[in-house]
Amino acid sequence: MTSKVIMWGPGVNGSSIVRGVVRQDEMELVGCRVYSDEKHGQDAGVLCGIEQIGVLATNKREEIMAMEADVVVHCPNMHGGPKSNDEDILDLLRSGKNVVSLTGAHSFPQAIPGYAKKFQDACQEGGSTFTHTGINPGMIGERILPALTGICTEVDRVTFKEIYNCSNDAAGIIQFMQFGIPLEEWTVDSPISDTFFELFYQVIHHVAHTHNIELADIKRSCHVVGAPEDIVLDKLADVEQSGPIIIKKGTVAGIHMVWEGVPKNDTDFIVAKENIWVLQPDLPDFFNFEYSGWEIEIEGRPCLNTTIKLVPSADGKLNRGDCMVGAGI
Image (cartoon, rainbow, N blue to C red):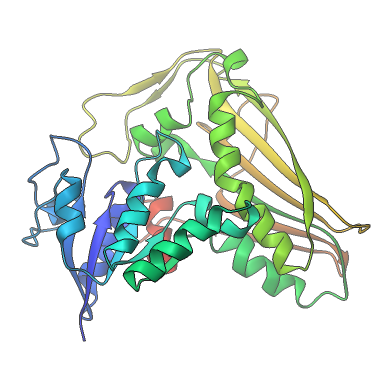
């Protein structure tokens, strides 16, 4: 039986998923939701870097809602904040379509009082299901980390990190993360910091819940560093990027965010999440590293440290977005 799939948001991650769906005989791409007028009406295969597949992308929300499909892979435009797309998801669920979300804002809805109920109600109304997956969030903290703590007799602290050189990423992602703004505007209580806190809040609760820990609070901090000189980014993932992005000297070129769960009960178990994003790997007074990937650190008995490195594919490309296919399909 062939599963009919709609891709909602064929950006860097979404495009890799479209390519994965096309490779599967048991799946058929039947719809593709885009946001811009420029992409509307284009063949979804061409948008995602492959040959024409006969599916035209649309920026008409109502067209997607009216389509017959088994599942919608929801990888939305995040500029309105992670939860700004909830109404789209709820309407999809009510229409009878199963939804897979690739954002951390749906990792563990139970962490927010009353938040999960609206999704449950929509699923009951449409006879549908709703789940969340991905690589980070989705795989590293929620799946691989618990597998590793399973071999420990004692666990005092777990830390899972994303370490990533964003210089080859999509222009839209670089702009979304607000590289290139003045240092004083990228703070722990700035709007962009709030957006990432919203993305990873449920993830940290999810990891704590997996280890039978209830959190009272999550502390957060961030540190940013400036570009030592102008950084010119001219080899981005965007096919349509017309020219280089220039990150001016002294503006944000490195971001280190930390979220640390505070247990509600009397326990020494600490859950911490870190993201380290840079536009070059040797920024002064910052982290120096030779790879992009993920690290898991476990303090306990025994102490463990696991590193997962992203390495170039056979075509020489190194793209974090390609990780999403294995986790999301």
